[in-house]
Length: 145
Image (cartoon, rainbow, N blue to C red; front, side, top):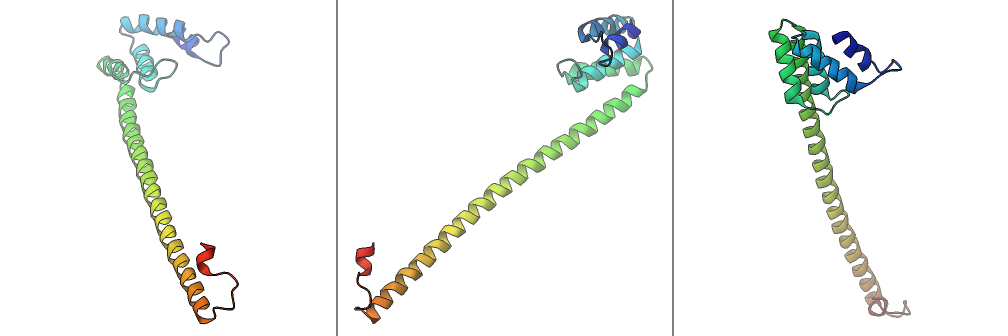
């Protein structure tokens, strides 16, 4: 049963059929075949060919360990390491996005303040220039508003 499951789960073969593979793996698993349980655990844990169900995957892997397949423990350990790294990566990306958003808002705010400051300086300079020489400009500052 396990061997048929392996054959049907091989995507390189023309008769790949994950549903048949699953039924053969389940049948072999029911007969305490630790290799079939290992395959089911991997498939469910990582969502390979089936919908991801980490709890079910862990159950199969724990049953595999009980049946003497020590490789299952390495898979569980690597999965926990992956989950921890994944959470850290997602957290880092969220923090980065938050930081970028705050930085961009601060840049926009500081740019707006600088623009306003220079506009005020420009207005002041125009008014002072006009007050110094009222006949130099044909239009007054007030009419430009």
